[in-house]
Length: 584
Image (tube, rainbow, N blue to C red; front, side, top):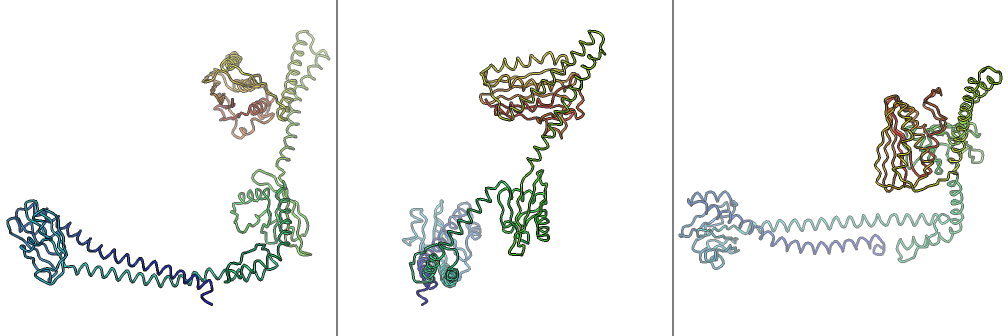
């Protein structure tokens, strides 16, 4: 039956509730507007009477005052000005039924005479004595004596109240009609999906749900609950088995370090894991494409490989370079019996392996180059001594001195390589001690004062230390400062400067080493901390610019071992600034 259905119950409830609310609201609005219009009319007339009284007080000429007052009042109302000497003035009105009032009646009326005796504002609703018109009268006193009265027919107010009442009833009727339509529409909208859900649940008794719904009513919702309960008893086993299988496969794919992508024949990506998502994001960005959230289509490199897999029905291996990284992809066809329904791609990021291989080759080449020159010199000068090319003792000593210097340089190279290897392996031990920061910095600068003077380079120092004692590994940090200051002096021309600024707080030691020397080419700045980096690509040596190219790499490892940071800023032929920050 209609009354037992959800549609009927909901529609009747909404109708009763809205009807009750509209009934109460209509009564309150009628009561409110019945007094509202009267009060507003009285208030407006009283304001007009006050304005007229001020006009009368400002004009000695009664006719002129009345003429000005005519401009202020409402045309449908009538104005009566009664002066203290007994004279009176009355204005005209567009309402022909509104007769002129007798001044004596106004003075003697017990509700209106207070304006003369007590100087109070008065108001009254009454039947005018000279006619049968029900009117509203307000009066206000004049300071020099007398009073101003304004009155108008109550028919205007009653007409306004009648219009308001008509509007309220019309709105209530429209609201009832709209509510009826809305109630049936809403009820149908709510019930319709419930019925569809019940039918779907009955059709999918071998499907997915395992929820027991309490049966509380005997309407459509109750029938839907019964259908869900019957369906749940049959699906419990299947749901558990499918969930376990899905979780197992998902965990395996998500935990893989390699990217995995499953595609259908149309190139739509069905399954991706986090590494694969990063790879796909890079491809989209490089190709200027925006992925759609609801339908992810493989970008062109994957689509091209997919077509090769589908047409050839065999595994395809491809290398893809994107965003500076190298990926190797192996795509294998997926079969539905004998039909290729898609493919699965396994993607591995080979960037680190290729980089390590390149670093290994570069390392061997750099070490070979660095050792070849001193070994050649050792061999050549030693042969000169053996073959008695150097005849005098002084010449032999000179050749021996060169051999000694080259052997020392080879020893420094080997020691620096060993130090760097230990640091990169994490075997660096810091021997931190509390030292006086001021004397530590002064000692380092004093060591380079003579070198700077010999090179005609001005060594400038600024120190702003708010703490006196700091905890660092003095030998290691001195090695860093020595390397950076020495580099700055050697790469600065005569009459240039090297500026060392040291600032210390309770939490950080900040050191900047700036010069106005040759600078570093912009393309080389990212590589200055790599092993064997040299700004001079030809690797030519002169008396001032010697080195193994390992100093900055060692400095960076020492600073990072102190949990600090080292950065560089440079402009070619303008200068370089190294910035070091060490947490204390």
